[in-house]
Length: 561
Figure 1 (spheres, rainbow, N blue to C red):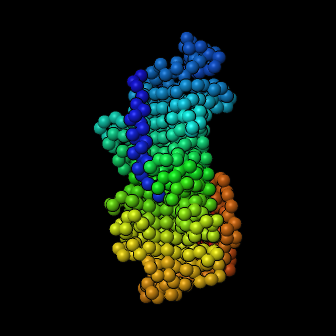
Figure 2 (figure 1 turned 45 degrees about the vertical axis):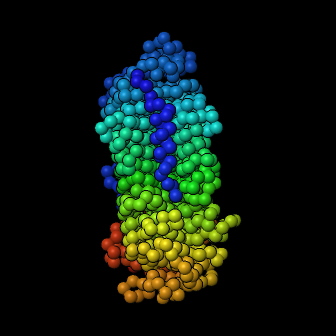
Figure 3 (figure 1 turned 180 degrees about the vertical axis):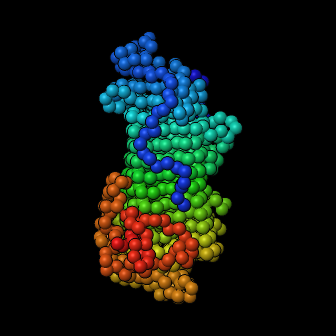
């Protein structure tokens, strides 16, 4: 076997990765969560057991190998299987390199046999690594490290630096648990131009108690990897690291991907040690194209710095991507963030729709929905946002600003048919003067702004307006075809602020708190976005109800029926 990537090379890749800030429906990406069957295999099955002997052939349960070192000394071919005895613990650092190569039809399988999962204990290093190779299935394993204070590796590290912009095909990671690592639970990345991976699926995995993040993908340049699918994941208690220049402590991050999906996953309680100027986020994407983030729950994520700690994010260089059907609540930072620091036009063509945010922005006076920097061509519609006063600071429902990058302004950003409910005298909307002095086609139309009784407060540049009518008259917002649109009425949610934690992303439709009751004035009162603007708003609302289901469209994330 050739040597694994040097620690220095990997450290450089990780350091550059953290330079990324955290501050349309995909086609051709499968969403079946069942493990792919192994077909056409012609390889050898090797067994490893604490009662084995490395002098054995290892090809039967009665004559198994004993150690990870023995596995590392062997070169494997397509169709081979390396199975560790379920319930047993194996200490060492399992590694595979370019000499070991499987295929989609005949992958190299790493897993468990007999009852339960085997545990690979990586000690202070990486438990399982793939370097410049692919065609693997890793499944039904526990991976443990010595703890984030002493471990310097990952649970699973998949890394490539081959020349020539190659795309290494086929990787499956299913039913694994990775915790106690100083870097990531699962890391998939590359660092040599456009070399990367394609056809990757990570499903039914749990990552927790890691320092840098739970699950991450990265590349040297944007838009490198192809066709990644993440489904039914749990990422929690990944702490972050104090003193870094960039973000740490995120739950699930998809970076450098064209054609990606993150769905049916939960991220919570991450990021509390990160004190960098840019913070962690529960579930987010950057440097990516055509990513779909849907049907997820992200809550209780933290930051120990001045920014982020939010629920969901489409970050720098993300384009043609969608956040939909997600539930964010109780995060330090924004529930839904569009953030773009680079001075380019790559953050474009993104959609945020049919999501619910409850009591986000708990720290740093953040908003539940935030647009920061040069965001282009964003469509934000049919979301339900509720925010109440926090223990510190003054959160608000939605904010558009560009502090520190004041020349980078929004263009063609349209915010329509949303419910912004700001209780306790909080602002419903804040748009900074530095955004307004260069913004092009920033439009608010058909939204409901409710403050629980008092007139909703809007901060618009250097002025503050009490009530929708005053803001509309002064700015021309909430007008369409010369007619006044929008409202400031009680949406009549079933139980505003009472959403609680679901904890299972398959059950998000049980979030009854943000359904409209039958007396809501927002039923059949939304702008017809398909008719007026040609938008494809999708077939269903947050609750999987048909859109539209009555005489017209409804405002917010619930289509009453």
